[in-house]
Length: 153
Image (cartoon, rainbow, N blue to C red; front, side, top):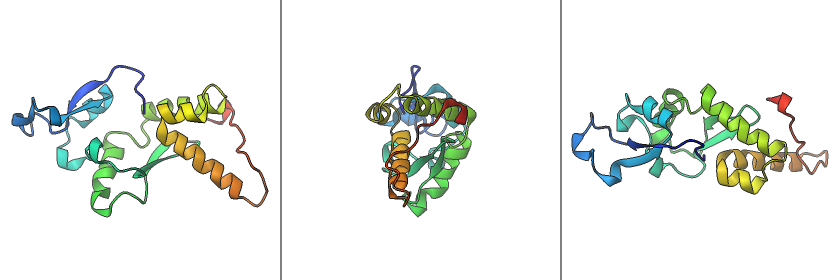
């Protein structure tokens, strides 16, 4: 998801865990400052490396904008993925959920196209497309997903 504020450099393997990696470019990750702070107490074997997360391992549920683990996450990595969702508050943390809800609101109110949403918040755009596909498959013949008003959040 696009960061609205400048991010920070995160040492994926913390300096406390392995000081020899403190100045290794391959160990640096760009992250939101709050994620970096939340991750500080975790070892690298407790979380997933963002460079290794596969497409479709996580999904956003609408309209709550909570993120959950998807079936495509490999079984041997699911525990680490769940740790990330819970300990880093990526799943249902108030701050990140309200951030996602704002992206979703902008789309629902027509301030942002689906293509624009995909560039800024790809998991939310994927959830919208999934919602549209479900609505199109319903026997009611409804081809569109109704726009959501701000009061629905």
